[in-house]
Image (tube, rainbow, N blue to C red; front, side, top):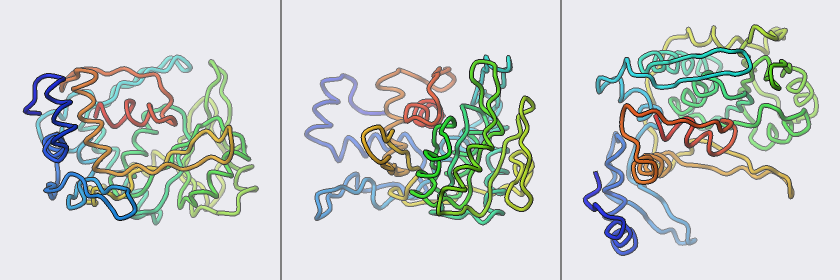
Length: 299
């Protein structure tokens, strides 16, 4: 889709014609209101990317492929060595599950700009939760599923999530490790209280629900589906924390528009991927590579 066909020509355009280069790159995603400006410099030296444009990242990752006739194509293929299971979810199935869970989040009071903390291992439901947040303009905050209570509490207090989503257990090898004790310990220590917790029940180690607080993930998927909300390009998509090994973990904010364009462009220019190809990654979805190349860029 770029008019430049060699590395040298693209490098020269990006360096000397950045406005033209990035507006051409922006054609890779579907906009509600297409950008007429690629980048605007603020007085403080920071930049606004595609400041006049609107889109929805979930629509770009899921709905538009169904609309373009790829509904029966595999969107996500998941293999688990722990439970010896394989799942294949088509774009049409993913659209239904994401739209339903987005409706469930909205029924729990989650709206645009609210934070949703997701502490789950790499599962289909983790991707669904992320995409459902993007669908309604909520900001997902995915954290490593293996954090103990104090580490989880620090991240809860940092972002003040309206809802927390966990799986009932993770696995070390093939040994199930229950997740509810860490969540309960975190909420005992944290000063912030979420309005609700959502749990993906896994057969190997189901959690005991607390009345009022806890809700079943798959039951919420059956909620009335909701359509994508159109957002400004610079509205936040997610917060991802640094490791915190040299100090307090710091939350990094990624926007919708610039994020979508950069990742869509990278799939062609770096990886040479085309529609219908399969892209494989083993990265935990709690890390940035899991966000970028486990979920958003390939979709």
